[in-house]
Amino acid sequence: MSIEVDEVKKIAKLACLSVDDADLPSYATNLSNILDLVAQMNAIDTTGVTPMSHPFDVVQRLREDVVTETDRREEFQAIAPNTEDGLYLVPKVIE
Image (cartoon, rainbow, N blue to C red; front, side):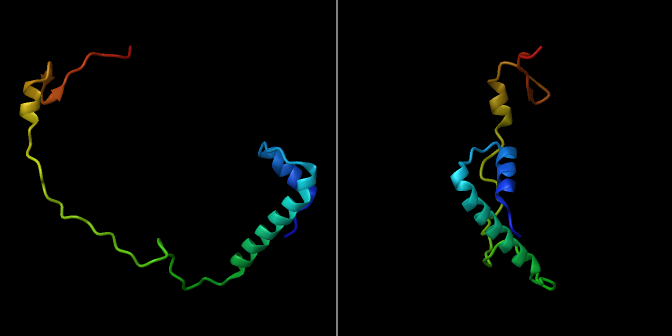
């Protein structure tokens, strides 16, 4: 697919980019090359290929799910200024 200089100007305007007129032909060439590469990749038959979440066969090591601290809720709420039914009461800050 070939992109013309006028199309690069439109794309630059839509993207709110400032592009010098001298650079427009190189941008057009580069964008055309990128779109050609995408077209080549789309032409490849990928039927039967399983999608991958990661390029390497990696397994995340997970730690054992073990409780490491005791429940100290009663202790913390005993020193709180205001609590009710296990909840901390705070002053209203938004009207």
